[in-house]
Length: 545
DNA sequence: AAGTTATGATACC
DNA sequence: TGGTATCCCTAACT
Image (cartoon, rainbow, N blue to C red; front, side, top):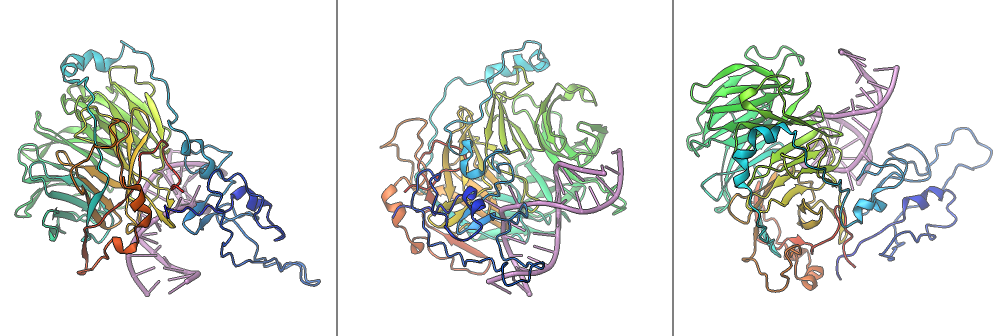
């Protein structure tokens, strides 16, 4: 009864299989799960190729891999399990020679850990900022706790996929959401039905939002329409701080889009960055640009993220499509004045300082790796660790971003959605992963049988045990069913993850998750959410027995 | 129930 | 360097 995994034939075998003679019987490499259900409903396509003398025109119904176009194997879903094309590099770690199924990172308990580099006292960051930041560092590492079960509320009011989320800084039950169309949603998830959608603030993708540190009723937003808006949440009245396309559409070469955004309260300035590599500073009082745009990333490349250090706002972190995250000193901000360049192998979707000390950096890159720099005062040439995790780029999905848990003083917990699916009890699901960034361990994975879409947008509540997620056009709020229960497991590392009740888990039927009694676009579920026990490895873990 | 579509990074010339 | 063909686990629609 426990979740069953249908491990179908291993790709390697399928290659050989050409003449239908022996079905994939010679399969042993399927570590564990010998329950090779042959009941694969393959409607065998036999090779009619050899019919009579007619030779040349072979409309063979043989298996052709849709990925590499070669014959003898097929990539794609077999039931709820995805079979990789064996001709391609691993979809998880990107290395050739194996597939996701046998990827070492799917099995290892720790992941591609790069040794922490030795301390380098030449680091300019240290020189400039250490004295200000050091007293903030917390040496204590309290346990964080993740509940066994969570309740999930669902709402769908966006007409395009969700792109960003933000919790209200003082009202614990308000979640803001932005979408690809530029709409801004305000959801009171306590009174689940209450929501407001502002549709006229932006005309295309809302890339980033940030509350005004000076006024928690005001929200700033940066959009691909090239404007920065400031909206009063009560009235919906919005003003435009800057518009980079005052003359409208003059072609793609000149249309400027705003991506990264953050606010420096001390300087009273809103920072935004565009798709051509430039950073702009906007005075939040006069609503006017101060100074000139500064090129902070490769010319012509998107700057998708900006983050001011939580304790030294003059320390700025940027990241973008030029495969770099970069550290800047705002007091000396000009092209070429960069403090450090953090190199990645692909586009960097996000880069964040750690929430408490501000001395760690966590980045998400499209090379399927999370990177952690343990201290900005160290040698920043290479990360302290790389964690292989599936969060690939897909043009139809909002880019994944690993987010710190803002409540974890040990600065070791991060949340990020997972791209590749896992076969959970017969359905392919894409969990939301909680990762210990010190060890690479997958601490928890949240999923719900009702949610079959990928969930790239996730944010943890700054004060409560609440996770907000955006998946396609839907929003989710996950909250503990009960206050956490530490009775059984006390190991700090072994956070009890969802579905702590192992026995019950397998027994749950569809009815346990009450049906989305649609009141049109909206539904609430007060139901259990599938959860997994603490696991050891990163990306995939087979559902147990 | 197959096919369509929106749409972004990248490899390659 | 720029233009373009290509592309592996999408999701919501017809």
